[in-house]
Amino acid sequence: MAFSKTWGWGQKGHDVVARIAECRLAPEAAARVSDLLDGYSMVYWANWLDSASHTPEMAYTKTWHYANVDEGFSYETMPKNPAGDVVAAVEEIVAALKSGALSREEERLNLKMLIHLVGDLHCPMHTGRLSDRGGNSVPVRFFDEQTDLHSLWDTALPEAAHRWSYSEWREQLDRLPEAAVTEIQAGTPREWFGQSHALCRNIYADTPAERVLSYDYVARYTPVVERQLLYGGLRLASLLNEIYG
Image (cartoon, rainbow, N blue to C red; front, side, top):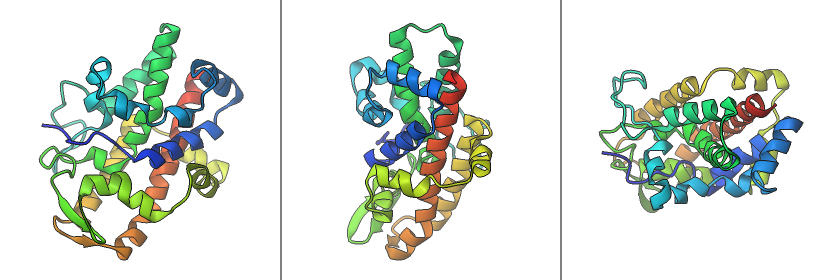
């Protein structure tokens, strides 16, 4: 069993993560990333994997956008999906990029995947339960619209939080002092996933099935959305600077 939707943040969210990261690259990393992407921006490729995962050539990545963790389990104790998950994928991609053993085309492919998957790693419902397919089977009502908990966190809630462009999101969020940025960038993808899962557990407790959600929910969780998008961008930059800087 797996998510019926593999998207993480909606298009805007992935664009925000990519833009924050792009603006935080060291000169050497920025030059290498631009060269590998043939001059296109990281934002240009931020959402590519959501569609690519549904093509025959990239179908092997369908399960890489999330990792199911049921109640009472951690990532380490939860039985693993044999097709892979977001934590394993990010760890393997980072190791492959650091190895220097990839062809240019392999390196380019892995970079494009990493840009997207670090965003997914910070989307709380992409750490959700296998038992309800990551919130896909948890119906909720958001204002006047019937939806599910997974879709709410992927798209509807971030869009309700702010009607900003991705560049405005980056301008408003990426304002922390460097000491705070360094602290956020510490740790490993596995630890970052654990932080997202801790948020996910709180979201489940606060959002039972059939709950009607409106302004109070947006006010409560907008800071969480902001923080996760910012953290995703800063940490993606940190990984790329470590690989290429």
